[in-house]
Image 1: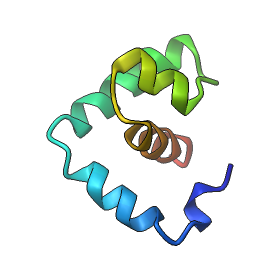
Image 2: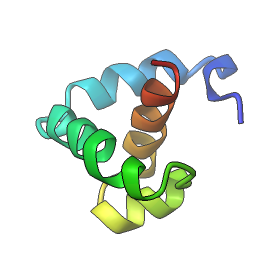
Image 3: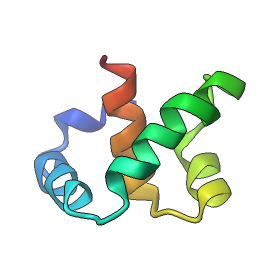
Length: 66
């Protein structure tokens, strides 16, 4: 899905980047979750880590684009 074409995308990214555990979540997802399941969906990730759906989307999109 092309989330980045949504006009609210930049607001969501800015909001997620201000979350206190954003960097920790991103590192954990990169080093543990994606190694086990590289095709995990944002909803699955949000449920598994008890994070917001928005945070899951942003982190997965950022890691996908690296």
